[in-house]
Structure formats: C-alpha cells, structure tokens
Image (tube, rainbow, N blue to C red; front, side, top):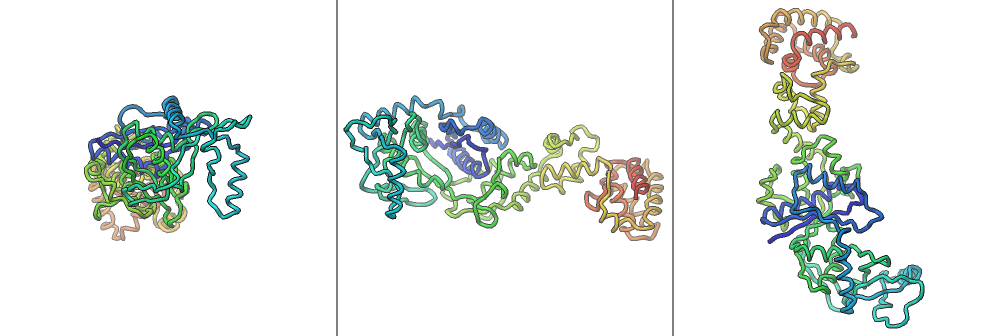
Length: 461
C-alpha cells in the first residue's frame, strides 16, 4: 500500500512551497488508495513555535486536505530514537565523538585553507583510549568509506555519488537530542512510508538518510525531489512575491480550490489543461510527471483561477464565504441579484466584498477625476429630470430590465446620448465611474435610495 507523508517543522508558518509539496504527496496517496500522514518535525525545541504549529493544522483544514490518523509529533518519540542510537552503538555502527567545537572549527578552517571540502576527519571513529575530560560527546554514525551511494529519484533520475562524500555525521547531539537526518529516516521506515515527495533542497540529505536506512536494515522508499518555485523573474521566491503564510491567502480572499489548482500546475502538467477539480486530480496525478525545472509564481494566473472559482460558486455559497469579510447578505432580499451583478467583477473575495459594499452603502465621497469627467454643468438638471421619470414609473419597477427600459426611454425622450445620464448617475450612485451596471444597481437599492443618492450628490457637487 502506498504511504506518503508531509513533515513540516513548526519553526515558521506553512508557506505555499510547503503546501505544494504536501499537495503532491496527498494526491498521490489518494490516487493509489493509500495513506497520507502528517508528521510534525519538532525536535528542535528551542526554535519551535506554537503559533506556527497551529497555523500548519489550520492550513490543512482550510484547504480540505485530510490526513490519516492523528498528527504525529517527533518530540513525543525520543525514546524510540534513543533505542536505535543504543543499537547502533552496540553494533559498532556508531560511536561517541569527543571532538570539541573549537577543534572542529580549527579542522574546518585548515581544510578550507587547503582547498578541501570541510568535513569531520574520523578522529574518534575507532577510538579506544581515555576520553578527554569535560567534553560531552556527540554520537556519529559510521558512514561507508568506499563504494558508491546510488538511488533512483522519480524526478531527477539516477543519483550516484561516491560513498566517501558523506562523512560520519552526527546522529545525536551532546545533550542526547537526535538530529534531523537520523529521525527522518527512522520515522519514514517505522511508519511504512513508501513514497517521499519533497523539495529538492532535501536532495543532498538523501544520501545521509540512506546511510541510516542501510545501517538499520530498513528498505528504501521511492524518492521524488521537486524543483523549487521561483518568483516571476526566475529568482528565489520571497515573502513579497507570495511565499507567505498559507492562511494569509485566506485573508486576502482566495478560495482554497483555486490555490490548490494554482499550486498543482507549478511543476506538473496534464496536457494543456489548466483547470482541475480536486476530485479529478485525485484520479490523474502522477509524480513521475513532475518537472525537473523550477516553476515561476504567476500572480495573474492565481487571480484568473480565483475569479473562475468565484464565478462558479452558487450565490448561497458566496454569501456564506463573504460573511468573514464584513458582508452579511445571507438573508438579504436582493441577494441573488446583488451577487449576479458583482461576482464577475471580483477576482478575490475581498474585491467582491468591496463591489457589494459600493452598491449597498451610499458613497461618502466622490472620485475627483470621475466628477471632473462625468459631472457637467447640465448634469444636475438631467439627473433631476431622470429621477422625476423614475419616480413616476416606480410601481412598475422590479427587475434590472425594468430600470433599463426607463433609462432607454429617458435617453430617447431627451434626445441625448447615454453618457449624458449614465456618467453622472454612476457617480451619484457609487462615487466613481466603475462598478456594476446601472440597471442592476438601481434594481438592488430601489427607486427611493436611487433618488436619495442623486439628490445628495447634487447637493454636494
């Protein structure tokens, strides 16, 4: 059975690069009818953040990515790791190293001066003398000193390095706490993880983890190292570019299905198709189709996708989604008309909320450029004449088409161009030249509110 996992460290918030990796693992497990595990790698007690941990769990809940069983915390598994450290020491596959920090720094400095790669020189590998006083030892694993470490990566292809490229790395610090590469290998093996999908910044950790797998007689999983996400200029993605907390995307008004659709296309493709439902992805995703090359973050693509998903939500769903953004139209009499008039205009829920608020709330100020362009000397008389006609037809006015008929009749009667009434009327109703169509706006707010806004605009402008 396929078992995949996502294993973030709670030292910072989950950003979109991490979410993309988790998504790939989750989709693969779903496609194969397997398990997807969430493991929190919190062995670095000094750097752990409870806020970051909560944000990771919240992000999974928001995007709807479920995991099997309970969340696994490495900080609760120290006894297990210690058992394997003891076992490796007893089998002479690991040893205590008494090299002080000062000695290690001096060794590295001399190696660098000689043009060599800094690495531990194995001083205590076969040590059987008297340990130096006052030095708490670290535990190092005995890495192979000859041969090659070879593994097949599902994205990169065959990776082949000389075994002596890996030195005897530390598996337990002087305080007894285990190190990253050691616990990752143990946990993946004990949890039956068959497929490890992760960022290619971990590629050079893999040979070290293979040393641990081999020392403990564990079978290797399948590895897939995913190329990183760059910004639109092809450079490392920064917080300013979009590498921010996943939950920030919720605050900015993005829909989870849009974000997942956007992320899955960063480094993976299925022909020329751009839009995928989560259910569809669970049947077609294949990690061997992941690109070897880095992908570029494209905000315009994300906004396009988000607009698509907003437009395809039911009005009842949108009303519910808008509530956290200060718009409560769940029981509004004109909810359907209001959302039909605005949901084509909002690329995010924040923008959609702003469009709705423009209609529901009378303008408190008027855009100066719009007034200069659209409010002429004869606009007052034109607007008052229009309101008079509108009030005369009021009992017959219900739908946008009814208000549209009044506008057409007014323009024809006055023998004027539509802009003569359209521009000043839009400014009076919304305070700007942008927004939904006039007939929709008037149908939503009604004749009385339309007249009140016009009269207020005339008084102020």
